[in-house]
Length: 556
Image 1 (cartoon, rainbow, N blue to C red):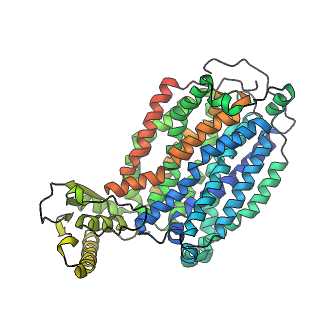
Image 2 (cartoon, one colour):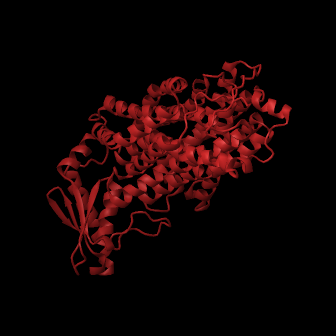
Image 3 (cartoon, rainbow, N blue to C red):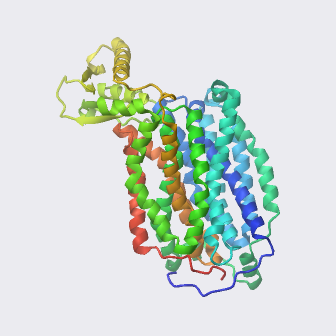
């Protein structure tokens, strides 16, 4: 659909623009609040529901369960997008909201692994899947609904309010988590208080449903209904015809994939990086992220408004390009500001593990059976990963009887090889080595936790704000771009699929993938290659194939 669509006058819906934006946005904020609570509490959920495996695997499992909700979002887009194009925008996102709110409430009453064993994580994942299906149908409906009410020349501005909802929902979840943590204390919050933010979502569900029920159907959809021009088979029309399918593919790789990895790197991965890698306590990490989000959120509106004047494409691709160019120095600066002792230790006492690569396992065990104690390399890397110490692997050919060497600065340690020891001596030898390694890294300046007094909090906030600013660049104009790419008869379906493949798969799997890459290599920055490569692909595809859409009328 590269050619311009013939102009058509906007349709008067009879509803005030403010009411449309407010009602749509508030409902979507509450849905994002529900969805992102899990991400904020990943560390605690790891302990509650995945305590049957080692710590590193448990955390990656928790992130994988977080990602499970994203995995099914494209399927929710297909199911609810089709319903939205067949029966209407309003009723569809009432259904998605009910599913989301109920699933979130049930997470709050779910028994832990200690209570019911493996059934707990299974039920948790099932609820995450329901949330993902619901969110897959929510976003396209809200964005389409608002865009179809917007006057010509203001779609970027109007839909940018919907774009703020993901961050505002995250911000609301942060505030609830922070206040609950502060009121109960860390011990009570970790034991049972983490359930409260999930439980109060039932109240938000009631408010959200009441707000959404005040709205009327989209004027564009009502006109199509009256004229009998709605699609009879939106899935076939959107994805079975090359004229529409090619724009789904271009939208995915030329805009949404890059937008997604920038969004999740700038907000969720940054939070996980602070808490898990840099050892910043959870409450402080949440507060710092919340401040950055509060400072950055108005820029969604700014870039949405700007896209009505200079176009969607240059802003989105500029954000992706900046992310690709600056992520490594930005996260290195974040390390220096949040945990200066760790940054200094990395510079002055770099850690290397020298071993035959064949003796080193990938430090992730999906079934929880591997304790990583079968070789000296495994023992050393497992201990370093658990301590959050970045290291470099040095390979060498296997030499019979030659042990794994760990250098902490200029100090060398030799890891025990269990196969050389009597069975009764293996566990004690491994534990003695772990204590020796912990003492060596501590002596070299590697901290067990970030020191709040040494932390440069203004600089941390500045780096986080920059990361959020990139998020606002890529995310502010994206809804308007997607709405304008597709005709109204298949808009809900066609725009929802690339959005949720991009954000559900490319973005949603980012924390899991990135931390698995870190676990595999030992380099705490290695996971950044994932968003950098995807952002570069989006810049290239977008420059070559993505059309500019901001002057297209959509009331047709």
